[in-house]
Amino acid sequence: MKESDVGWLKKTFVYEGVVLRGAAAWQQNQAELHAGWAKFAPPEWRLIPPGVPWVKQRKAMRAKGVRDPEFIKNQPFCKYGDSTEVPYDATRPNSVKYAYTENGDLVAVGTEMIVPKVK
Image (cartoon, rainbow, N blue to C red; front, top):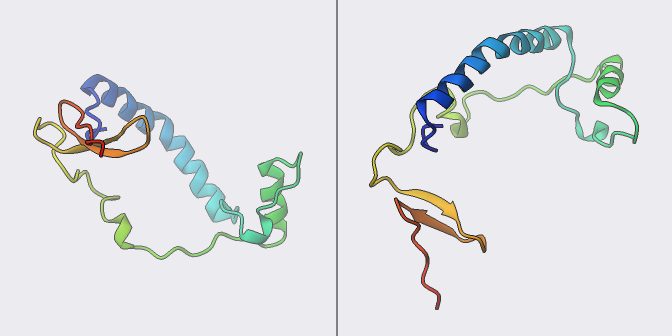
């Protein structure tokens, strides 16, 4: 949200929503994990038949002993996951940001879009 220059009021509402509403979902998730409910379907379980909801698929997976795989912690791509560090300062007008043009080209933008020169 910092990178996208979201205003303080919207950030506050989103934060409060996550804190207030997210606690119950987090607790339910932890209870399901401890009870052995899988959150991910292994490749052999990914073709869910038409008309079978995910709830029933998970129940069948649990009955067959399917569990989530062990995940390797501390992967290099997770280095920003436990921090509030932002790779650039979104509050500075000289910060380089990027956007996609209508034809899908990635360009650097500042206060105005930098349009690439057509050859």
